[in-house]
Amino acid sequence: MEEGLSGRFYIKTSGVRGGCGGGGTKCGRWNPTTEQVKVLTDLFRAGLRTPSTDQIQKISSQLSFYGKIESKNVFYWFQNHKARERQKRRRVSVDNKDTTIHREEKIPSPPTKHFAEVNHVIEPAERVIQTLQLFPLNSFDEPEPGEKFILRAGECREFSHVFGSDFIDHPPLDLRLSFY
Amino acid sequence: MEEGLSGRFYIKTSGVRGGCGGGGTKCGRWNPTTEQVKVLTDLFRAGLRTPSTDQIQKISSQLSFYGKIESKNVFYWFQNHKARERQKRRRVSVDNKDTTIHREEKIPSPPTKHFAEVNHVIEPAERVIQTLQLFPLNSFDEPEPGEKFILRAGECREFSHVFGSDFIDHPPLDLRLSFY
DNA sequence: CCCGTATGAATGAAGG
DNA sequence: CCTTCATTCATACGGG
Image 1 (cartoon, protein in one colour):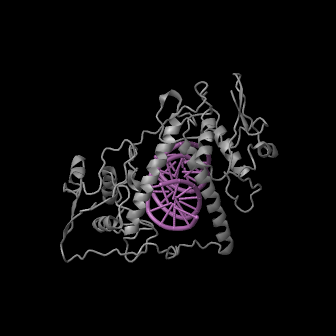
Image 2 (cartoon, rainbow over the protein chains, first blue to last red):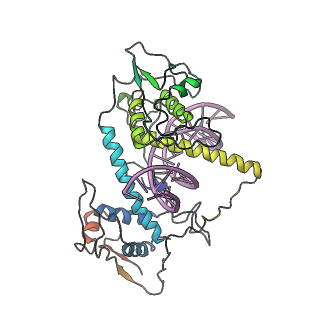
Image 3 (tube, protein in one colour):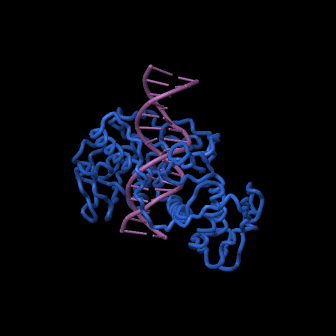
C-alpha cells in the first residue's frame, strides 16, 4: 500500500514528522513521494531489479524532481522491494500449500477478551493433540536482558519445560497444543 | 507496496474477533484469536524472538487451527512484539534518566557512510529535460517467475513502452522525466 | 461519536 | 542476497 497516504490526502512532500521538507529540517529518513514511488515501482515492474550505480544515480537525479532523495534511497528501495517480493512469494506459496490441518470450519469463538477467559474449553469434538515441534534448530535470539530462558540451537526441540514451567493454561502438555 | 489494499474505503470486516474467516467476511487485517495470541505469547515468553521462516511456517500451520492466519501474521507478530518490548524498555530507561522531558531531539543517525553521497542537485537555472536512459547495460536480474517483462542488457534504453503500457499518470512521457 | 491506546502491517535503513 | 531493527501508518476497540 502506498505509505501513509493510503487514504489521507495530505501531501507527503512536506514531512509532518521526520519530514525533510521543512526549512532546514534534517530528516530522519527518506519519505518518498507518491510520484517517486510510482516511478520506482514502474521500473521494477518493467523488470529492473538491481540497478547499477550508474542507473541509481540517474534515477535518483530524476526523482529528485519530485522531492528530496538520495542515491542510497534508490538503492535501498530496490534492494528491499526485491527482497520483500521474494519473501512474500515464499510465504504465500507455503501458505497455499495446505500445510494446515483444517479440521472443520473454525468454531466462532465468541468470548474474546484480552485477559479474562483463561480457561479455554475443549470442544466436545474430537480432540487432537498435536505436537508443535518447532525449533528444530537455531531459533532464538538472545533474550532481552532479564529474560528467563536462553534457548538456543538444538538445545530444545520442544517447549515441554517451557510450557510446563509456567502458568500456562493450555493443557499442560509440552508444546503440544490440543486441537480438536 | 501495491497491495490491492484499498487505502481508503476499507470495507473492513465486521470485526468478529478472530473470525474473519467465518461467513465469508472479507478481512482487512488479521485479528488473532485469544488462543493464537496465547500460544504466540507463550512462545515469546519461552524465548523465541525471531522464528526462522521454517518455524514461522509451522507455527502458522498450527495456529491456523484456531482461526485464519497466514505466515506473515506470525512474522509480523514476533517482529512487533519484540520491537515493542524493546521500545518499552527503552522508554523506561529514558524516563528514568530524564523525567517529564520528552526528548525530541533525534540525533541524526550517526553518519553512516556507505554511499558517497554524490547526490547533485539539479540547478533550477538550467532547464533540463533529461532522458532517463538507464539500462545501458546489464541492469536487470531475471524477473521472478511470473514477471511480465524480461529486459536485459542493451535491449532497452528507455522505458517508453513501460510507462506507456500502464495507466501512468505522470505526464505521459516515455521515461523522460521533464525537469525544467 | 470522539479519543486514546494496543497492535497489525509496511517499509526505510542497515548489518552480515 | 538475507535477516533484523526502527519508525510510522492504519486499525480495532473500549471508555467517556
